[in-house]
Length: 263
Ligand code: OOG
Ligand code: MG
Image (cartoon, rainbow, N blue to C red; front, side, top):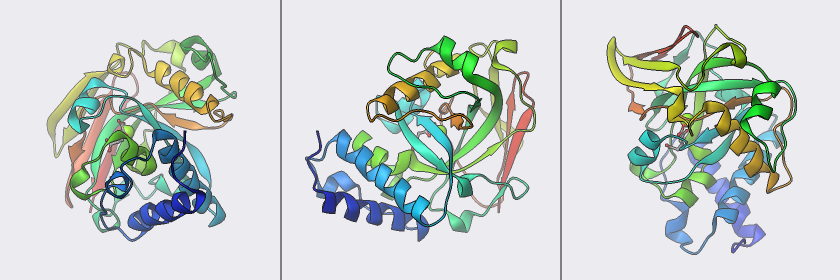
């Protein structure tokens, strides 16, 4: 149930998107609107998405967030959420990210799914995801909460498009049925040192379960995952803060490596 008016939703979407585009941190939306609901938060997120489309951006996919215990513990929130990925979030420039385009970025290693057939809930399950997936890739996501000190509650982070900011994918891909995605080992290195390790099962028991959950959450709004979508399934480990000069290298078993450099 929504508690905000259409005018308030519109104003808050402008507030949060401006914070992203102008690279400044703002106070949480729930500070001003303590009685706003999760439904309001997704309304704000979808309004931000429409603003970007109206300005010419394309939506290339979706992401799930807070799907692993490591992430939930780090952020102090306890249930999975989704956000959208716009075309300009994809880093093509030799995997280089300019720190001055962001507020206070952190990175996390994820498994990405390229969805070949539309996925619809309710009742979407792991098997449906496996057969609809063309291939999986290793990915690094850059999250950049628009909230001061990267601190938020679940409602605020949903409104802020789940902190989505940038991502990069590796060059190696595989068919999901050729991998044991739950046992897949992941290593994240920062400046040559191992900072996090994990396995695919950290994400809801199996990364494909995260895609199924996304389809089921979207069904609540009458939406689905269209064919051709890229879906990131959520950080396997805790996220690491990065600064100019840092390089991140993520190794995913059977899927090679993906790297990102901050300047
Ligand atoms: C929210 C986004 C979480 C993930 O992979 O868990 C996320 C945040 O931690 O700022 O992208
Ligand atoms: Mg993420």
